[in-house]
Image 1: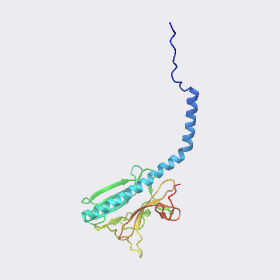
Image 2 (image 1 turned 135 degrees about the horizontal axis):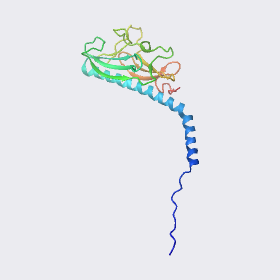
Image 3 (image 1 turned 90 degrees about the vertical axis):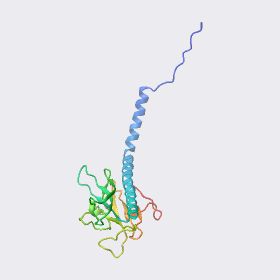
Image 4 (image 1 turned 90 degrees about the horizontal axis):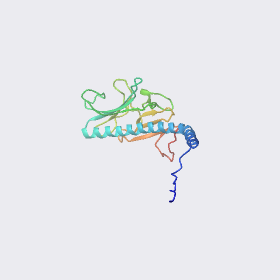
Length: 211
């Protein structure tokens, strides 16, 4: 009678091999952590800028469809647990305020670490808004789309109305803005601060760089 042949299964990992693999993984995570954090914050500020642009376009479309003006505004943070917001609403009574009879279009909360801030002056909240229309209650300037889709003129008026913008910054000083062009065209663009000015991605062959 022949003895049965023993078949050995696949060889497993030894404890030393597991410890070496874990050590290598820890080293890789430690080295890549700064880059991962920078990518996370980059995604946050790019995301909020893109969503703000979408909210603006939606407000413009709603104004045209309903033949009324719409308003987009920033609401600065009032403290921990109350993040800043970008709000858009149909201003049915044309008083430039959000009232009980107006229709909310949407609201976007700023993610943690992203604030309303302008570069290079570092002006925040109300002072971070460039151009646009004065708020009747003295808050940050507001963006108004008329019923024909054009943008209300900057107030106080300027000799050369070159548009306006809501501006954002993150802990790495990646300053960005959502720019709305001249009143007649109301072109909406995402721009980033390059150390000298705000530019669109690829403008004059220059791609955005990140801190």
